[in-house]
Length: 111
Length: 115
Image 1 (cartoon, each protein chain N blue to C red):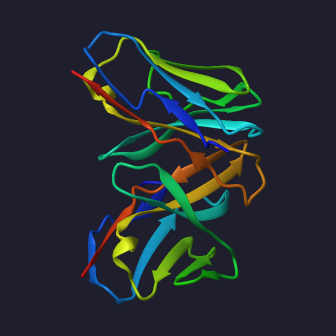
Image 2 (cartoon, rainbow over the protein chains, first blue to last red):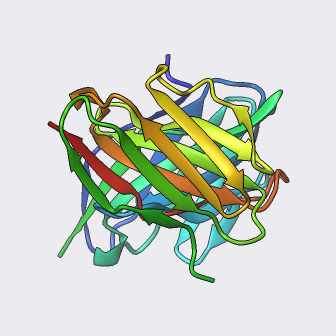
Image 3 (tube, helix red, strand yellow):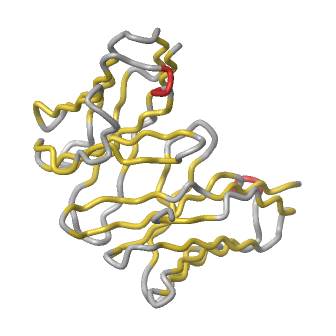
């Protein structure tokens, strides 16, 4: 079983739609959680951190459920520019300190 | 700040040749990470350094891969000899610390093709 699992998609949604991505992680030593965005042939960039109480940044909302080891990202009012791959990232602090990346969920927003 | 700098951006080489990838982290960042990304396996951590010292190299696939960080502003990842299955995008990333909120900043990557 992969340490961080995501539905690869692709999710094809019309402009203005709301779309949600889910991610599950298996390591209970997971301490911090992030969503990164990666555009085609570019490097990953931080979209937002995920806090235990949930957090919002404009059209983006992230949720964490530690009991179920589950993270989600909700995008409201999708824009064409939101088309990208969204990577769920778990940071472990157990002996060593490393980030584990999911393989990503591809989103395509259609005009 | 210029961000994380990697070179070369593209490398095409023949099987058996030595390949050296280079990285300059963001100034003041104490942590440096090397990743490999493929379609099949996604982003995989190869090795990371703290204050120029290798901390965890458990992701280095085999002895053909080696990484060094001679000073705070430079790191290399070497593959010798290279094989076609090493073809991937190699990213370098740096981070300012270990606190739970610290993110990683990625370089633009080196796209390696081994024929």
